[in-house]
Length: 374
Ligand SMILES: *Cc1c(COP(=O)(O)O)cnc(C)c1O
Image 1 (cartoon, rainbow, N blue to C red):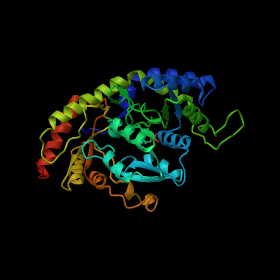
Image 2: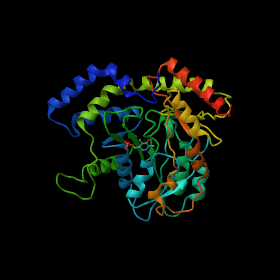
Image 3: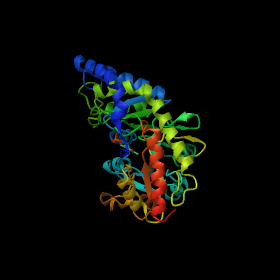
Image 4: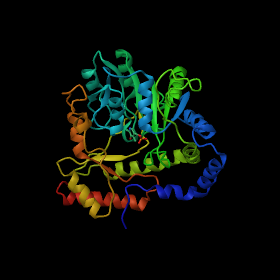
């Protein structure tokens, strides 16, 4: 009994032999940093994501950092950033000495609200950082139109959305850069940390390639200061084993999401997520809202019933202690603050069984009734 929120062991069990074989080959090769496995993964992911270039990174967070370094963002610059996202999105802005300007999100899709961005953009704004939160594309037509109108660069945080589509195209292919993460809980989950930068412009791709290796070009000549943001060969080799299965993982997540959407329709005390017709989500998370100040109580009762859930994210970014006095200050981000108090993510990993999913649904309905919301 007990339904885990997430379980990667189930995903890797049937791949054991293949993973061991490919991993052993890398161990025997003597090449452990970058190398042919990383180059191959870059090629395969560029093709998968409809992009011309892909550049392996040590993590998604480092990918965001390198993207903004390549765009020349630094002290005095502002970057428009959603107030409701994973910390790393904005942390990379602050690390460069730039100011995150907090833009509110929409309460139905949880993605950046372009009307609010319009109200907050300034002369100092250099870039906008849309996040495809929980696997659903931000409204990229609006984002790119807005960016063009204000002369902003676009860095897409696609850490949770590899393979998600907006219209006919994969996310990460719209901006100056797109950023992927292979953190184990992402849709293409690796065996440790890793990430990838996506990009369509040769000069930017080359800059990112230099920056990930201490800005070195040619050997032992450094025109600029970069860092060590390189991806391991072993990580790339193991990710390449999983990549052919990725569309199958997405399909399984979609089946869960569709089932949740149907089963939870009209359930009092709960608001389902909305997916726009222009977007095709890969459902990194299935996240509902539990309004009325009872989210934590509902989560606790689900926990007592053995149902794993998570809160992504319990604190809006402007309320993080490290960001006090860092941003422009005083932006209103009401929706983000409310979401932080209302969101609850249910188990949606590919290997969740139908029986488990039904049990989650039944438990959610029962707990909401008990909590007096139903
Ligand atoms: C996971 C994640 C990141 C960071 O990726 P890491 O590989 O963990 O550094 C950035 N943004 C979002 C939205 C994420 O979910």
